[in-house]
Length: 135
Image (cartoon, rainbow, N blue to C red; front, side):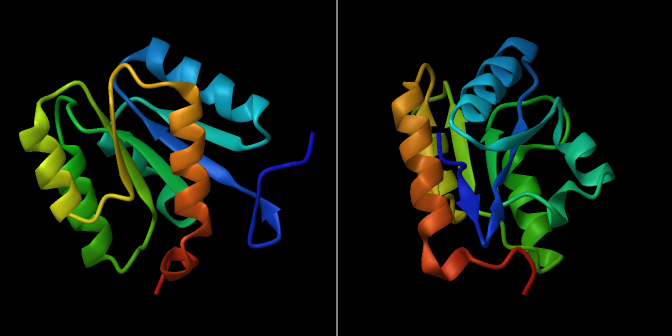
């Protein structure tokens, strides 16, 4: 199987979800598709590490306790860090509309198919305006 490549290196996908089973399932799928993954339980854990400068794409649960997904998107923008974000949510269309206005690469409603997730990641990684994680 060919590796999922971004900018000449194996793409690293960040997964931020407060449900361990979701993190493990998404991570397992993405590794089987050739991606490297880093899975974290909160937005705070993502910001505490250096992950924001390493990941090529972020799969982010929009509804988590603590610092929220939309706040993370705003903080990354303030730090001039550009990471394509795929929001996943079990919430209604209102949250989806807000996330799209915040520049989400994609919105996937839970439950989503693995094919839909992989397509969203591939599209985000191929989007020309998002090649750089830092501007």
